[in-house]
Image 1 (spheres, rainbow, N blue to C red):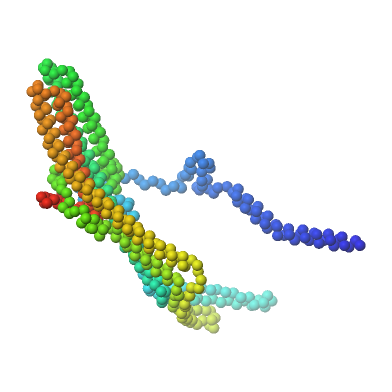
Image 2: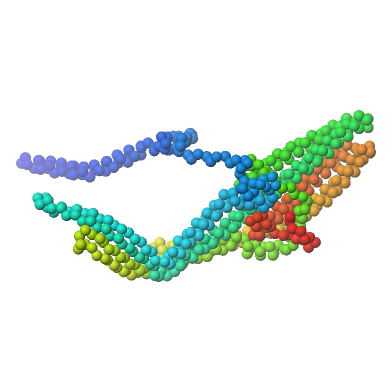
Length: 507
């Protein structure tokens, strides 16, 4: 009668004891996770690896962040072959320095070399792969605990294996073709980068020249305004002019000096921008060779349709886009080949050299393997994605083709407008010069007023500024059109915009 309760108690104890053996690891795991969730941040250089709060910056410990490179020397920054011409740089020097120093050209060149190496690695698939290895083994065996017998064995096994893909339904050839197209696209992209950098350098050069021309025009305006002040003062002392004439002349002089100060500041800003475009520090010491008035402003002799056709065939970025279509088609062949079997030939030869004579001997084997895809749902989707990439590459090329045509069209008419404005600016300057001379003569003769002279000189200053800028705006428009057509050379060569009545190039 008393055994039953004891048995029942033991069974209940077992029911509670055995589950606790399974619960214990779970509880231990939960405790470890909780500890990990409250673990402190790791440390870098003795400091927390992240800011301690969202409102505080992270203070880098000493020696963790690489030091900044030294500041470039403002004098010894030009290459030895260009340094002798430091004070007389011409446009080819500007473009050459930009192409050498600009990080964009260095990046595109490195990417082109990487693409060529990738193509070489892909082409190696047509050759067998041979690997060699050497394994050294030392083993010791103890025979029985009472006998104390110990056996040792030393062996060295050199081996060589060969693997060669015989056939894979176009996968190998597709990979090589894709790598080849990618390398060509990167080379063409490098060419486009060179043209972009050359255009940036030319634009900075023309802007600097325009700023210097504006400064020269402002200096002339200051000199003329100073002459007016002296003349007005003399007339006032002679009693033929009022103090109002003197004050108006002084106001014009102050305004001219203010414009000159602004022009001088703009020259220095443009100088720094040109230095940066050449890949030099902004405070680099250099100067440009003087240029005369021999810049022949002329419109393009060919029509816009011919230039668009030329651009569609010469633009390197458009050629790269067409090459990327071929790359996408080759990658589609690679994706399709995964749906079909592949045949591989293999061979292995080894010769172990052992301390036991009966364990030595050469081994040779040849294998012929056939890999048959049975089921993999990802492969059809990979084919679908590759086919879509072909369509995407074609769409990108078509979009770029449209953009190129629009760029050439816009640049062509910008050049025509700049040409016409340059010619009109010459006419405006000649007219304003004659008007100012007449107003000055009338004022000296006592017939005209100071207000007429100031108005004529203000118009002359505006005409000088427009004429000073017009030819450099035209030169910049020509460089832009040459870039958009794909004819901008690595030394700054541009299209030759010969008009029917002109036989001179831009310079």
